[in-house]
Length: 298
Image (cartoon, rainbow, N blue to C red; front, side, top):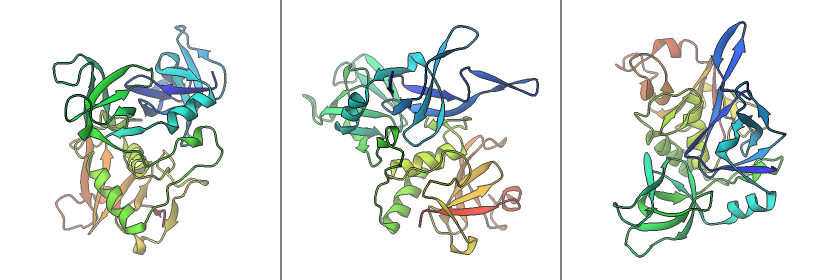
């Protein structure tokens, strides 16, 4: 298998070829990332078995993050097939959870439920029933979904087979507006370690998914990494859409002291607003005290 396309609704990417990992004698969750339906990965080696016999493939995502994906979640393809999928009329799902049905009507059988950020190929924007698009899933199945939940794909998956990361050309003010609006659509989504969709999302998942949907691929973890477009800027220069970095945590600045982030803190447990203003009722001094950097692509 040279490449894979995620064929399941959601696919966990593990740090090792197992659902769990051991560190200092403790059994820990080995979750690293999450991939949505229709996304392309490069398979970098042979499948490995865990103690139960389950097979995992080592992969590199198109945004250059590495890990292991269970064999059952991947459709094995050649580079030519991966490129053909990428060149087709792919659209991004924008609903919290959207059913793909067997018929262009609510009475159709649900073939799969897709979370925000999934990719499908559009065959017919307006099928025989108004408001429904005819779509092709990664595994070749044909179904229907409401076209109101299909949006333009602004990012390239060519990084799966290229060493460089293709980035969209963006206009600063438009990007800042779009990325903050995109991040706000995740408000209230539960916190999930390694999550990257509306099924559940973590701090770096929120900012990287929001940037990706607006055409820019940044490092998936909560740090500024070499080789990615984000760079550190003085705190005094931060604007809406820039990222705030804390030890092991990241948030997106929205302007006027407000920021959005996904936090596992008891009482929040998901995507919420907080403030840098000590007079605000949603001020979090624990984060303000340890903020270490501001990152921007501009």
